[in-house]
Length: 229
Image (tube, rainbow, N blue to C red):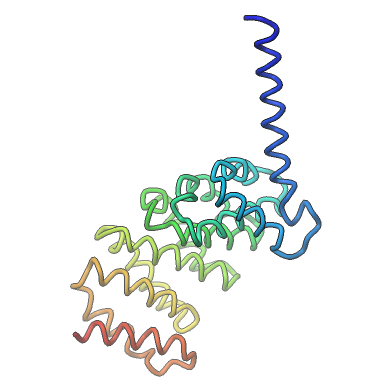
């Protein structure tokens, strides 16, 4: 092969590295921006050109924890409106559930919550980690999003609903009203696939009709009404 061939290959490689660094350096932590504004701009660029998400996924493996969190947040922002674009990167997001950084864990769980129904095989592998977060994580936000991921997982079908139901029931028993809203959303998805759970779900939900949090009481009322039809 000629010198020109290797020269062109090397030039293309250098340009690729430059492009990756350029998008990563546009993120909030690299720009010294304490808000999410820079990440939001990058997320909009990724939604317009989904190929950029491959560059963002490289940042998930960086040792810079703030950069990891930024990349996870970009995936969350894109997944909120275009989950199909983020679904192929689910396996890359998964390891961040065990990050020592709280923000990284919650952004990873938040991104997964938006795509869980589209990647049940990936989420299935993450169920032990999600259960651990729900049971033990000190962050309320992390637990919320972990439960949202399990609730979304229930949308995928009968088997995923069975697995999710066990986790959601345990969470309700453990945390009560604190995470009941997320649990009830999951119950609603489970009823779509496992109508035979209606009696038990009604029994579990009824005590929360008088919950102190109005939003929890409202979610409980929806479930009870549905199960009484």
